[in-house]
Image (cartoon, rainbow, N blue to C red):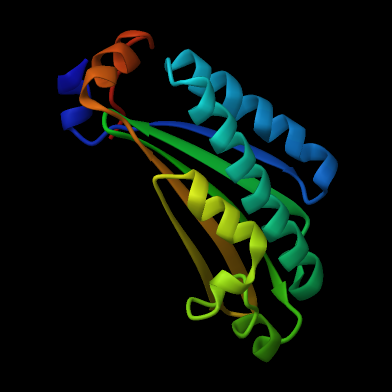
Length: 166
């Protein structure tokens, strides 16, 4: 199985839900089930469920204030050494100046937002980004869980092997 990942293949899980808070339960259940199957501790499972909820809630509020967006996308990438969770939304920007100065996604002022402060205390690593191109704006929160070496063999031994598609 390790040779499979040396070639750069990554297992990915993608979910797209409407940009509404009531659908965050689906994302939380997915994270909970995945982390549980990977053998992570209850504290890690709960911490990442809360972090994903807060990150997505932050994106929902941001999108309702600044974007014409309809969907929230969650992409979970599994590699032998980490789990990376991308939460994002994309849509037409209402106002360039309001978007670039929003405290939740502005690198200098992100500590003013309590949701992202909570996220930073629950995850191994996180990053927020905001990009604009051709009238579209994308907002992303990336969460990373680094896996200990001992868990790597358990992690990849529990999933069925699949061919690498280039």
